[in-house]
Length: 113
Length: 113
DNA sequence: AAACGTAGTATCGAAAAATATACCTTAAGC
DNA sequence: GCTTAAGGTATATTTTTCGATACTACGTTT
Image (cartoon, rainbow over all chains, first blue to last red; front, side, top):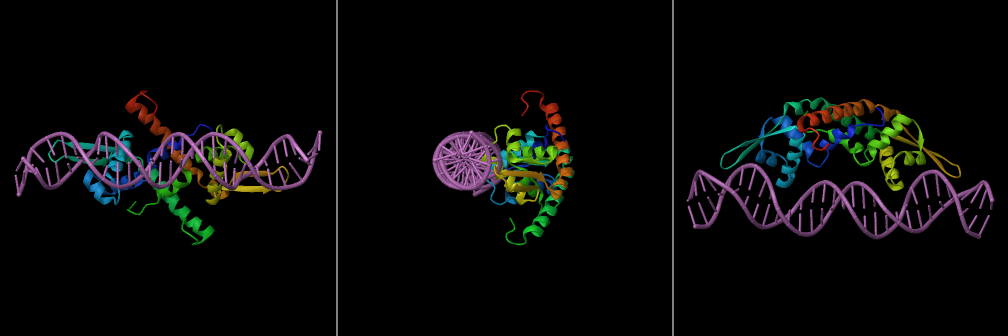
């Protein structure tokens, strides 16, 4: 690890209020259409959902399949490339779980941060 | 990985324009005093540096050692606990490097995102 | 011909985050 | 008794992100 470091790249595609949730939904669920995603994520607006999905699509993490039907149907799924990211997500998750316990140890219940 | 997922925790302590850089400086350099950090990070303001250091300190990633001298001296370093985070940072970094190459492949040089 | 359903886009504004600027404190040195 | 340097705090302003609302397109149903 030197002065030129790119772990921010991984952050970039993960940050934002909604990206983690969207990713989780798609990872657990396989393929989902827009409306399913929206229903499964309370309080997300169409605008946010679209925006975040487009960003994930740009990064080749999410695939967008449009069916030329009326009413329209658009299905989202994790790409093969995106799947290759799951070990990292898992590692981050494990660290996070561990860290919450660590904070607990340090500060007790005073407020769960 | 299920519906209850905490990889956001790892994100939390890493996000922000400056935290990654600060972490890197301290990881590469060992112990640094405030002014050294500030000099080594172009354009960061005192306020930002202080704020980010305090957050890292709260999470037990950074240690702050105050010397009661005049003029004051305060040295920052990565805690032992913080060191245990480096494999994760490394993994994120590796993924990031790889991902930049992937984007290159997909979109060419059109603009480096 | 009006209403419906799906998957959006467009516009505006509020809230949160980042940045800039000025000021404070301490004791030693001039 | 003013200046200097370290390590800040306080306050204001700019920038970015997020959200609320309204609108579009198009076939199908009523």
